[in-house]
Image (cartoon, rainbow, N blue to C red):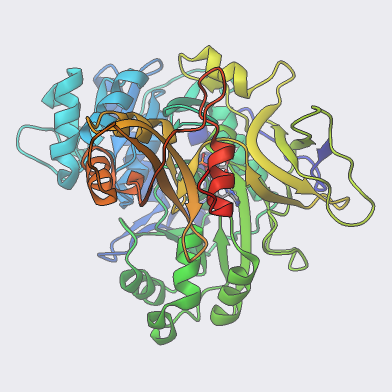
Amino acid sequence: MARSPRPDATVPDLSVFDFLFGGLGEEDLDQVAIVDGMSGAETTYRQLVGQISLLAGALADRGVGVGDVVALLCPNVPAFATVFHGILRAGATATTVNSLYTPDEIANQLTDSGATWFFTVSPLLPGAKAAAERVGIADDHLIVLDGAEGHPSLRDLLGEGHRAPDVTFDPAEHLAVLPYSSGTTGRPKGVMLTHRNLVANVAQNMAAIGLERDDRVLAVLPFFHIYGMTVLLNYALRCRASLVTMPKFDLAEFLRVIGEHRATWLFIAPPIAVALAKHPLVAEADLSSVKVVFSGAAPLDGALAEAVAERLDCTVCQGYGMTETSPVTHVIAVDRPDLDRSSIGHLLPSTEARVVDVESGADVEVPADGASEPGELWIRGPQVMKGYLGNDEATATMLDADGWLHTGDIATVTVDGVYRIVDRLKELIKYKGYQVAPAVLEAVLLGHPKIADAAVIGVLDEDGQEIPKAFVVVQAGADLTADEVMAHVAEHVAPHEKVREVEFIDVVPKSTAGKILRKDLRTRQATGAAS
Ligand code: 4UW
């Protein structure tokens, strides 16, 4: 068992709102909290807190408070921060929805989370409305931030002028958010994160990562995902930095926004690192303001990290974690330029870890020199989730009686406490940092009349990035092409979940209990064996 080399972080017994905004000083209020990277419109901390309070008041006036779940389907625009923190300030729980989701996927999350109010934006209204209708959320409970006929708008709600309510709850028990994650296996599940979980992770980040007041932080990674939620919307704002929002990634726009707003920190996922290292457009851009590029959500190759550092003349750092840990557990902090960039660095303060041999269940030996043998990474700390909503069985598989969360990632560790992710035990696939659940794709594949059986794993493309690949068994006597398989999946899932490679096989390898042997498919992929 290992602990962080840094002193413990103090985790105050506060709500997310009070921790982030309760201590705003006079000198902070006129600081820019958020810049809309597209229009350049600025929101100060004073304005942001004012809007959050008004939204909380409008929600309270509608009877929304502790015990209610409010869904938010919205790209990265400044109003996301108002709504997200307004929901929490009112005492309700926010469930953030992937803005790429299909109406079916949205409806599943609305139903599973028990959401009764729903915020979205007009470009996403068709999908949101279809989902809302399916689950019985009426038009007056479906708020369209920028306005749409028949729906309340954000301006309507803020214009009512209600004061924020007095709410009381126990931050250690009360759910702040319910993001969705498939975890180690199966379909997406609601991850129960308390106010304390989120406050803790911000406090832990503050004691390690190194973002400073006055930094301008590019916020292109989605706020709905735990990475954007905690690191951008919570940690950066608590540091009194300025967020520069972008609703979606487009390289030319990304480079323009960095130059125009003099962004100092870029939080990215590895595919953006590939673009920064290789794309010709980068050579023409003014990236002289960039001090730090911080990557997370999927493995970062060491040579790629070097290439980015050299080309941008900046520091490249890496963080690791998962939705179930709020998410950050490990980082290469900016004050550790000595660490290998392909490692995930050290444990965050107040975080413990074990690296456990998968066969024997014992902690791996850590040699005096070099890295340990690989084992499953286990985590314990105040950022670890309460469990999965309404799914005790899935919770019990991941969280043991001693509070250890079994990540499903395979890591090594050195005697200096530097960790490296070397493999994944669980079936989860990360495509551009987004979660893709094989179970979801396999169900879609099995829905095709010409497919007898199917299994999906992650494989690497030529840039070393993970993509979903389907192994398909065709029904006897049927004719099916790889393109037809991919088109069928694309019709039923969000764009990031598409199957991007297909191989036809005779039989899907399975255990006697009928579980897909993904390990065998990975071996087959690695060796090119047609066994
Ligand atoms: N290297 C290898 C990594 C890495 C990784 C994540 O969608 P989720 O549940 O959560 C995330 C969290 C991203 C994140 C955490 C902490 C942090 O500092 C940061 O950047 C600043 C980003 O993506 O997926 C969790 C799974 O994603 C893989 C790993 O398999 C993990 O269980 N993963 N980060 N640096 N793999």
